[in-house]
Length: 295
Image (cartoon, rainbow, N blue to C red):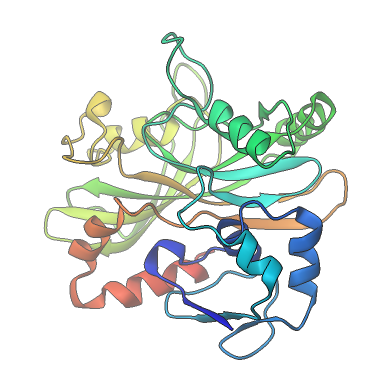
């Protein structure tokens, strides 16, 4: 029996996503068969594939020769949060652009993802459905075909995505509020909720109602609480972190092909967690646990 304890860096990851990281070379059909079997348990009981795991949960997987052969000896190059025949949703690291920029030789998320799928022997050409800034981490949707890109692109334009971001901002921020300052001559609205106030910075949940360029970063800067590490909009620089402390934690949508309601969580980056520990203090674990219940 293989046993794993869920760590803080996998908090809120789905069981299916965890298995994709543990067995990155496994065909999707094998993973789905494994998830439907009685060979997997969380805390000694069956567990839904799409449900979020919590730090401290105990995962057990019945050991077999095939499972042992597929088991990864190090984390895969791509953190897959969800995948089907239409899309792949990945947890983008901070500092990595989504697509090719002016620096032609620079790595980007699409390139990394396509390379991983070639290694897995399931090559496709990927197209971004949503885009995060280079310095922002979190859930990013990549379409597996032009048809899928068109389908999901229309869905995003007509119905939008439900988005929840987490950020560390500077100063003492109100408990909750709405920022409605226009950006570039267009209406823009961001709602925020204080999750924990520290001595000189705060941990907040952000809900963008509109989708303007750099909206969250600009709105928080205009409020007088720039995101930590966001030098472009007045944030204090960070050491040893390649971006700013803004993370796309959850994306929700109704799958336009199947009609299935999806809520996909992206665990916080390892480099984000020390700041959260500093803000949370003795209540850090309680603060981390509360993220699963955010509206």
